[in-house]
Image 1 (cartoon, rainbow, N blue to C red):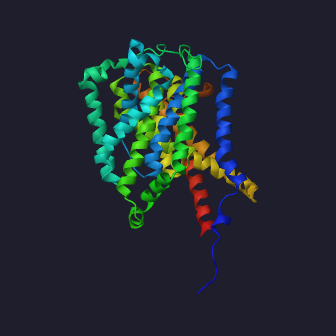
Image 2: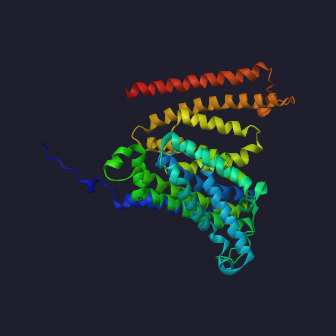
Image 3: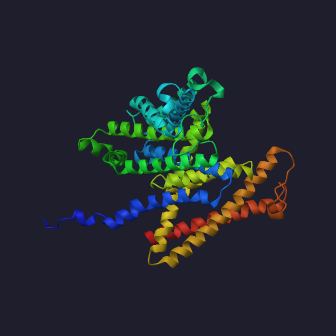
Length: 422
């Protein structure tokens, strides 16, 4: 028998550590949101930033299911879409200026989306959360198809193929914002993005947020200590739907229109890719993934018609070689730089960077040449003035040799890591 005891109070982070880890990032985030307009971004950049804010809240709500509760949903866009549709209806009721709607500002629409998303989560989650794992994923897929089909069938609610549109400049102003110019919409999106990020983080610190992780890892033990894993999943599902509905309310004000496509599997798949690429094990992961994927969707299409292929390749590469996503790479590099043998870490990262660069260059050559060849217009890929035709030896050399060298070099580095760890 041992008399050794554990002082749990000593294991708890100090007040300064809590402030640095939990408060400082939000202060910096708020300062970033405030400072951005002073750099004079163009209207296109502001619109891109607004969509990034919407996607950030949407991705964080999705990660409440996937990362925290271990629930893989293929239909999370349903809750954003229903919240957005309800927000557009409210926008039109405000525009009619009758009764209580005449005093409600459009600025508050994400709160209505939050309520609509929570209600949808409560209704749909009741049968869905009775199962976890593959049955839950299949149920979410079926629900997404049902709701998307309903979007085309019930014109009075969803407006048919054309959807429902509104005018964000109606109703009383809030804080002097008419929400007409896109610059004013930025402040609206920035405010609700901060609320969404703060709210989803606060949820992770609650007992329910902790229980969701426990239900994901060991539901039997959760049941053994007196909690119902099914009820935990159901409550998490409602909150995830609520924050997705908030993102829908933000999108309703930004775009002033919602169509049945917002309920389809396409946005559900896109948010799954964004969240996983960012890193589902970290709170900041979905934020990083949302920023990257929104930028790729908006700007990469200006450079190449095959941008969807790159998104797919990026997703497969992250799943296979970096399961912790971009956040895992960033925090891993940061921890390595703070370690005693930072020089060895830097050399290792440099080697991996070279291997990744070789693979990336060859993939770009293969995708671009193949895409141009499949189009049949005779167009030749000209990177940096180099002519890469489909029948050229140089094309196949640049498409195969760097790829083989990069893969072999990466495997060599991984094998060395395995030998050191064993």
